Length: 183
Image (cartoon, rainbow, N blue to C red; front, side):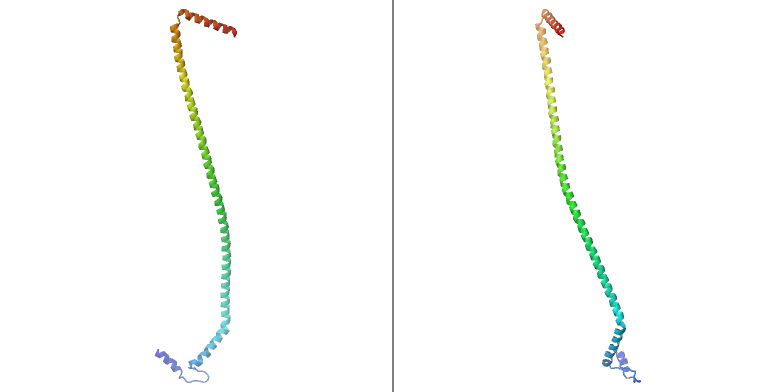
């Protein structure tokens, strides 16, 4: 570090040759140099800097416009999505209500169908009972008739002798003959 400082100090001891030379007084030369450099930079860099700033400004404005367009597009899509959601919710509610009413209708139809089936079964049961009663009554009548017939035949056979038997047959034949003449 000492070498660097010494080299700057040795520059201060150079003899000046006319109007050109190194001024080693840092406090006097630095503001002048800075003002010259700044002046050159401002003069030549002003256009470049303003172009850079203008380009930057245009890019920022373009980005803002694009963001606004994207925002508007997103808002529009959001509104469309909300509209679709409302429509879907309304349709879901309609399906839900229709579904519930359809379920109630099917339940009512099923209950009516079961009631009708039970009525039919009750009617079949009653018809079967009536049929079985009629069959039993007919069977009892037939047995009673057979027993009465057997009893009558037994009574007739025991009470009738040949002469009475012949007279009964003759009377019946006479009755049939009269009936035949009437016809």
